[in-house]
Amino acid sequence: MVSNSLSTSFLPWLQHLTKLGKLGRRHWWLSLIVWVALIAPAAALELRVAVEKGVRQVQLGSSTEAIVRNEAGEEVGKIAGMNSFSAVPRGGNVALGNWQAGALWIEPSADGYVWIDDRWYRGRTQVVSTGDGLVAINHVDMEQYLASVVGAEMIPSWPLESLKAQAVAARTYALRERSKSATPLYDLGNTTMHQVYKGLNSETNTTQAAVAATTGQVLIHNGELILAVYHASSGGHTENVEDVWMEPLPYLRGVPDFDQGTPSYQWIESFSRSEISGKLSGVGQVTEIVPTKTTRNGRIEALQIRGTQGTRNMDGEAFRRALNLKSLLLTPVRTTDGFQLQGKGFGHGIGMSQWGAFNLASQGTNYQQILNHYYQGATLAVIQK
Image (cartoon, rainbow, N blue to C red):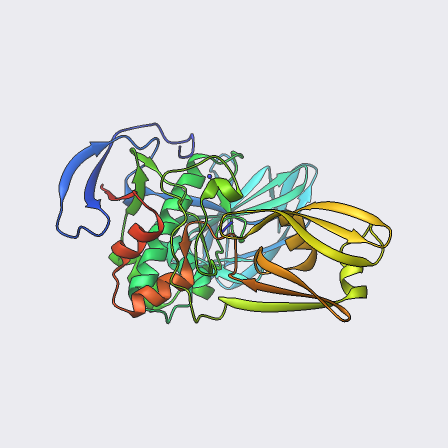
């Protein structure tokens, strides 16, 4: 979730930002001009989200009559509403029904929706043939995208202030990803590697309200978008980013969390000796699991697996993936027939804790204060038209 300037199709320009002041100071309003590399006005922002990548076939359609265009933007045909076609790669092109081109667009009329594989999305669809198969890309307005992300990343019935905090974090994260995209085809994906995006399936009135109430709001530090990462629950205290991932960032500091009493705060996973030995191969029967490096909060960074046929040093993340654990804030305990892993939290523990935001909002804390707590020293700004 988790889980990095804008698309080069936009020329850099200065944006007018309304600074809301240091988070939590609700009445400090100043006007200023801040350079934010390649950010376009909020109303014009369109994201390119890869819904499918590297597939041999993708089902495409529209809820209303739609224009089909080729890669040059020329109209090549139309499809009737509530019809779908299978797009397949063919000779380096995309074949869709009777049409074939290097890339094809489906553009619905009258505010229609596009169908990609198994669900509806707002905006329009581009499908491109690459050496690895087809890529289906949803081009969608930023604010519409966020209404779906908020509902996919949080529970829509949560307090509105927590949903607002999620909307600002998700908007900031998406724009930063857009500015640093490693591919010219799309800005970000639709899974936890980026942000979960499910189209209309995860939109609700509450997520739309949270996005509308924070329209255009982003988090910045020294005039740049911050890396607004988040996670489900830290287990009592978030982490300094450099202790888990990378170099220090002044706004991603470990702070006390407010996730106590939530479903992810504490957990236990038990494994028999044969189960854990099968998942942690190369040492025979596992006899000991010894953390060799931890963060100051106890999150495992590295460990040694000892067994009847040798030892194995493992990176913490590889260990988590091998056992499908919620987090690395855990203590291994030997039992009579295996191991019990007593853990806390869900996710990497960096940035905003979503369950912490839920508890804070439930106690009357507003979204500005929530963001101020989890992103220390960041500033809330509004992208103006």
